[in-house]
Amino acid sequence: MEQNSASKSLDPRSFSSWPNLVTLFRLMASLIFFTLAAVKSSPTLNFIGLGLHWAGDVADGVLARRARQETILGAEIDIIADRVESIFFYVNFLSFNPRLFLPIVLYLLDFAFVDFYLSYQFLKYPIISPNYFYLVDRRVYRYNFSPLAKFCNSTVVALLLIFLPQWQILATLFAGGLIILKMRSIFWLREKPGFLPPLSSGYEREAGP
Image 1: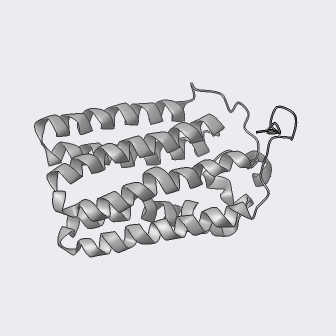
Image 2: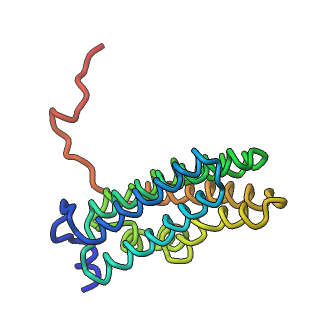
């Protein structure tokens, strides 16, 4: 029963569900504070934006599952919103703390590029969102999309930089470890058969110079 509900969305193109509206609200609200933080050079406003990002990310996910309104579109805009908000926060944070550039750059490389690519691989499989990757590969789910893995992926580096900036080596090592783990996960998924478009004249390369 769980697999059936996880592998089929009633209306994957729906944009007007409550979880999607929560995602858009937290995106706009957090970006307002991030923009104000940049304009006013205010770390406090930047932290408020981060709090809205985290709280909204939890809220839209919980609402989607409890209201049974999970959709493929909802997963896509959630993934994009997470990256946009995080980039704004870390760019501001870097301007306030330029000496922390190495862990920040490494983490943005992980979250905005490597993890973004990994998260979007769910579209290759008959699942609604990365939350159901355990139906595809339990290792990928355990190390990337389980509740503990998502907490580590989205909050640990930020908490280390905020509360232990003098030990930036910890955040640097953690961010580097995330990149290695997610690259390994990408290779795990490449071993799993996924959706590929059928070969036809529309997809085949034309022979010739």
